[in-house]
Image 1: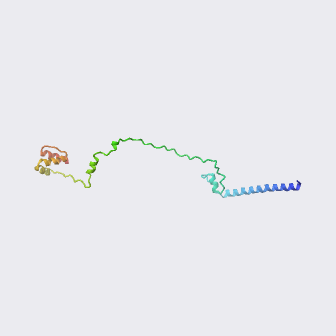
Image 2: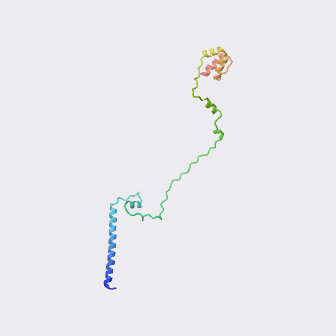
Image 3: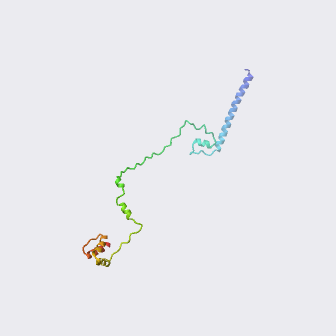
Length: 157
């Protein structure tokens, strides 16, 4: 190789190195200008998200080999209610329930009659059996008319 060819090759190599250096300097200047225009770094946002917001290519920044951090969830222990066994007899409807329901009527019960001494004496004048029927309503028992009248008056208040 002659000296002219060697010198030309050397000039081309030096020129290529200078062009590459100039391109690197230009790229660094562009990145510095972009950083000057970018807002302050957001500390609550991850670095890949910041890069994405700044318009940088983030496809290479995220590696598929890196596994995400596991999410730690609080441990909630189930509440176990105690099992209470109830005898079937306790759940059965009482025998008297049907009688109670049959006794319920849409019409209200008549107001109880308040007996006076005079009204009781009038019933007693017709016979002691009528007075005993009234006494039975109050759970009163007696032999004489006067005794029944006094107990009925006391029982009805």
